[in-house]
Amino acid sequence: RLAQQRLQAELSARVQESHALDQRLGDLSRRELVSLPATATVREALETMQQCRIGSILLQAPDGSLAGILTRHDVLDRVALAGVDLGRAVSEVMSHPVHCLQVQDSGHDAALLMTQHGIRHVPVLQDGQPVGMVSERDLFSLQRLSVRHLSVTIDECRERPDFQRAAADIRNYARQLMAQGIQARQLTAMVSHLNDRLTQQLIKVHRTEAGLPADTFCWMALGSEGRSEQTLATDQDNALVFDSADPDADRPRWLAFAQRVNQSLDQCGYPLCQGGVMAGNPACCLSRQEWEQRFDRWIDAGGPQELLHAAIFFDLRALAGRSEWVDTLRQRILDKTKASPRFIRQMAQSHLEHPAPLNWLGGIEGRKEGRHLWFDMKLQGTALLVEGARIVALAHGIAATNTRERLSNAGRVMRVPTEEYEGWISAFDFLQMHRMALQADPAADATHPNRIDLRTL
Image 1 (cartoon, one colour):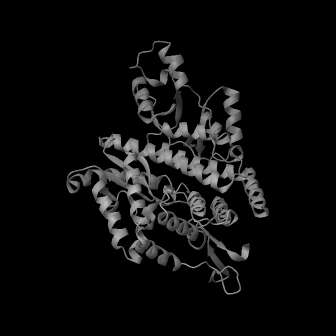
Image 2 (cartoon, one colour):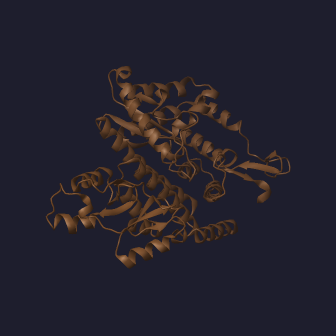
Image 3 (cartoon, helix red, strand yellow):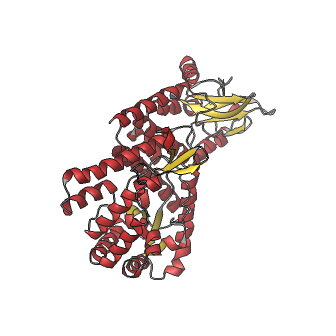
């Protein structure tokens, strides 16, 4: 409890230090600029705004300077209601001069300027040149992020910059919740839910672009996403199931689609899986029958090393498409694992090769590197509980994929004292919260997001 209180206090201080409206406009996530020559027609300006899904467009003078701006309100007042010919020059209906701010100005300055002049869009300049645009909606979202707001924002995403802004908003929202003292299990569930929504929307956009049917595939979440336990620093673990009488002939089009989704997620801050466990990899893009055969092989004849690499696939969860396919596959897996002592023994042996990182005095065992004594809270901490929970769940036919639910259900089935399995869960939650706090630190090492120096504890 004391550690939880200390973490909350530290995170609250960070949030106050980086209050959204106190930030420099140059540090805020700004919209990409879209501009046209002031000599363009009103029709060209409206078509560009529609295609780019933006509420304003900048107009440039022949010398490249800012001549004016056209907003949705200008379109209503000066074009639609005035009955202006769409073939006329946009310079005749644009707003000018343009009220601008500099990159060193703050969000407070932008809010004040918008209020003073009754405007909703402010170009941001650096050395006299526009480098970004801040809207009234941007400022509102920075101050009042909510699940509902984020969900609506994600549902409206169509282009890559839209998804990138939504992903950044998800991470900012998680930091706000941490500062408010939200517990690890609710926090990771919320982050996973919002990441699910973003991934589902990405899948929908790319599937529509590719002209693929919605009822002949299922996108599976694996690993931490499959367990609904994603933290702020999470890579991709996913796979694809498709329906086909000739998998080799149909696989290329599903692979191309999956690779586009994987690349888009990477651009949104969800790195590509270093182990290649992604739907865009041929080994993870299989027909329904191929997936059944693959799991049968792992369960019936898999060796320790093969099962070590395959473990992540046993945390499968349907994310988009035919979810009933994954439900059927999961039940098939549980029926076989529960009846296969050899498989459970192999999984347990692999797990025991990663002992708890304790030295003979009972202290935490770290890895010395110069002045540091490193400890990885994922590989040496939460991963041990995740692996153990997966094994007991598969051994007892427990359908849950979430680690907390697996430990709770297994504890009851195994008739373990309540305080014992609640202790497992508390340990897992405690480590998860420390991981989230570490990742939320602006000074965190992006290449080692779960690593902490034991000497700092």
